[in-house]
Amino acid sequence: MGKIFINNLTVFTIIGCEPQERSRRQLLRFDIEIETDFSAAAASDNLADAINYSELEYRIYEFVSGSNFTLLEALAGSVVKLLLEYPAIAGCRVRITKPAAAKIAESIAVELEGTRGRDVR
Image (tube, rainbow, N blue to C red):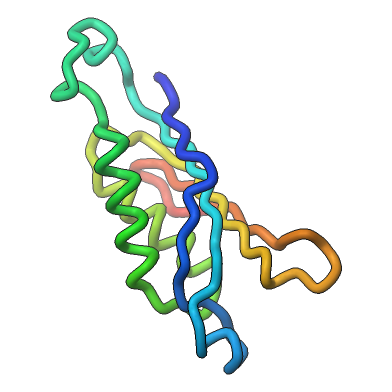
C-alpha cells in the first residue's frame, strides 16, 4: 500500500450555521490522505495503472466550491464518500480547516476517515 497526499487545497464555499456565515463564501483548507496500492503503477510507470491525482484534486475542488453545507462534519463525510467512489482507493482521511471559525485560535479543523467496506468514522 502507498499513500497520496493532497495538501492545503484551498476552496471558497458556503459553510456554517450562522446567517452571516451563509451570506458569503468562506475559505476552507483541505488536507487529504489517500491509501491505495501502488504496485501496478510502480511496475508499469503508466498513468492508467495509477490514480490520477490531478483529476481527483479538481473533482474535490469542484464539489466543495459548489456545495452548501451547514457543518464541516457533513462536508467531510461527503468528501470521504466521493473519494471512496474510486475503486482503487482503499481508505482516506480528510481534514478540513476553517480559519474563520476560530475566535482565539488560528483555526478550527475537523478530520474524518473512511475505509472501503467500513462506515465513515
